[in-house]
Length: 276
Image 1: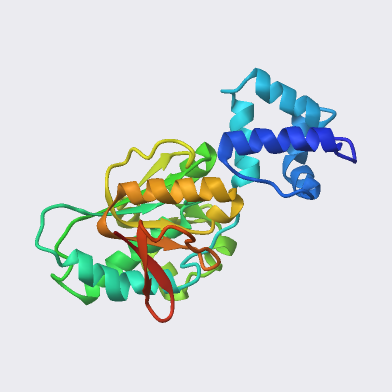
Image 2: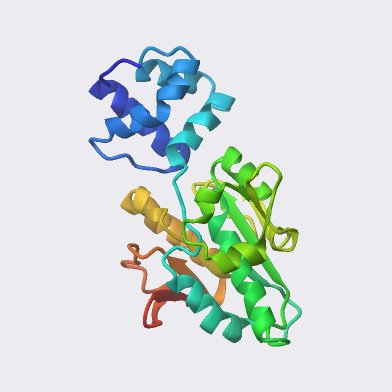
């Protein structure tokens, strides 16, 4: 890739990325594009970002498209990120929703799950809750985790992480309890925790076709979308939440102008949203 990206090429790539994934790049993110696409550009011998965009438009369903989207959407994530959502899940939601006398499973969706840290953190909380409160979680639990990137989803299914990745938010006790060290030196989530999560490739721009949920985690992803698209996703999320179900957003995200769909619930600390 040449040292400079022309404004025309940058605008064309911004349009491609927004159409493909919903992500809205800012006006001055050329450095981010260059750093994330440098290897792809070199391997495919593209001399400019414009050449890459032309090829992507010629082959809209190609491996190259998946690779580019993966490079631009994969973000580093943490175990038990922000702490409060997982405390609220354990101390409030599992007791409230899990004790219902119904054979219907408690269904939880982790949207934009990246490399799996969030859904596996949810699964660990549920496992710990069951151990601490025998018989109180009467319902079976289903966790669905989705991400737009196929390579990321495939990696999350394996549940294999390097030691450095485990140090980002995971306690030594949980590492010992929920992981097994492999001969390679990496660590794998134990099978009983992996089996609690079903991973699927899914783009938030597309139809939500996973059935109804009791709880939806949609955290730290809406900040990358335009205001209109963010509102559209939140309204469609309401459509897959059961009445009285809960939406959990990221610490810097909030609902605006959707009072007819959700009511705010103060958990002190932390805020969640109940579907009307």
